[in-house]
Length: 156
Image (spheres, rainbow, N blue to C red):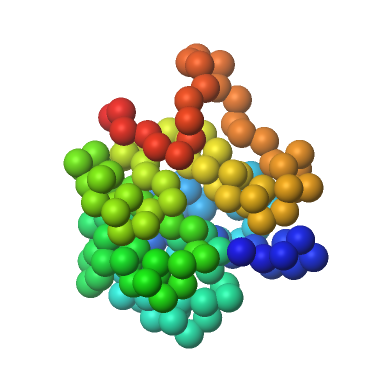
């Protein structure tokens, strides 16, 4: 994670083969954090990028079932080689939560996930990099239901 003086260079990567999901997450995160997001439609492309430029990956958000290299395998490789990178795994299969945790996932979201939950997790990791940033980000308001822990969502 970046030091406080380097917080302007905070990098988020989204890996999902579903362009609609990817674009929706990108727009929400870019709008909410004022940070550019790098995207990939396959785990292999994301892994190649991270291997060559690990300093440009602070948070990786990946679907568990992406082509070429699954999100679970990408998670394993990243945590083995770059344990400081935060990793959020997303999937429509909530049974993968235990395996993801064993592989070192920092957060798990069941699809379809509420964008407020994704944003809350990103905010948590971003704020941990520089606590002074906490007041500059806000969780999207949720007027319908009580707030829940953002680190795990397994209701579909």
